[in-house]
Image (cartoon, rainbow, N blue to C red):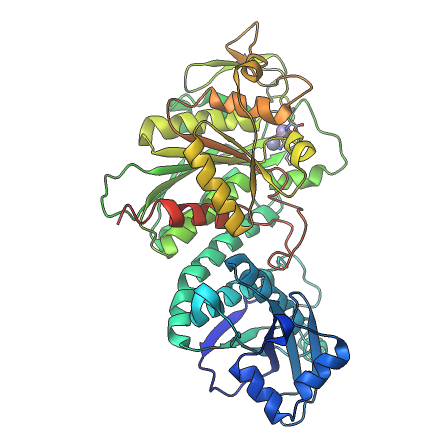
Length: 508
Ligand code: BES
Ligand code: MN
Ligand code: ZN
């Protein structure tokens, strides 16, 4: 694995190293440091900006080589626009990383001295830029052996940006403010790593074993093996995995961060289908490789739990992960099979490719029985239909609770991980009634994402609940300034924001 980007904060007085990056706000508004650079270079910055028609708009930059009067070989002026929102600053940080990374040299210095830092303050602004740069720097190169050991070749072409020095006012507070953001990046990276990993390397057992590492951050980790799952009567989940050589697992991750140990926990449940062939109702070959990412809901839950523990969030949270591999074989479940879920409700499995809901049915039931949570949020790459409805820009949100839904919507706007609320209702619910059992696992041709959600709702007692269908956002969504990875880590920032904004202060 490539080393993650090293980030350091230092006062504005420190001598920069490597590529020097300065911020220019709208209409070329410069902070004191950038103005000082301009003076030392006898107005070079302003002249260059004029020549290039650069006005400080966001996502624009100009490069000046060997600027006279300035102690850097390469200077880049970055348009920051207004950057008045947190997300703007993350994107700007990501853009800055990309600008330096595309050029020679493994060190860069970003002078964070915006003309107007707004509410964030100079230190918050700097910490946001750092998080954006860090998120952007992620890459999954674990299995690329080419160009790794050949040091001579590396020295010649360079190997991208490795060290970013951020100069700002109150560098020490910026550095402290960065710690919680670093925890967030660690959670996002864990989620991305898990999603990017191919299914031969990461089956249910390997996923569960990797979760044991979270204990090092203070998460209580429990792995339920097949014996335990059978004893709990999780027959719906087990049916999904029965065609695979690899056994199922359920992982329970607990973080006790609230002042009161007894405060009702918040439960996050993730679909962890490590590979989804469709089973006997097999998927077509084209694009099936993407189904290594069918555990992205679980990956998000794992990432969130890591983040909460690392930043010592003041909440009690439980992450529950249902792991199975959906394979066709002589032992696989058949269309028409009827299984009894842990809840006692029976399910007619008319399509073995609608397997995620079977996994969730049991884990969600277990979550409520054991933890009596304040709410349940489940995340699942549940349906192709949600992409037909919403594309890859928004995740589908289904909720039985307006308040929780609205909190998530707000967190989505702030984090940029956006959710769009979809309907639930009796008429849709009827579509999954079965002649032969309590319900069937598919609802017919139309409204596929909704009937999927209705199915899950049948396993919700009277707990506030949100289901996020992340099939469109969790992998292969549009790359942007803070994500260049196939597995996006979608949802970690959204849920972290939800908790920070609504569930931590009250608990303190
Ligand atoms: N994991 C898939 C959904 C999916 C498809 C996620 C493409 C991401 C990209 C899920 O298990 C599935 O196969 N759903 C079926 C449900 C249908 C059989 C009712 C689908 O969407 O076609
Ligand atoms: Mn499927
Ligand atoms: Zn699936």
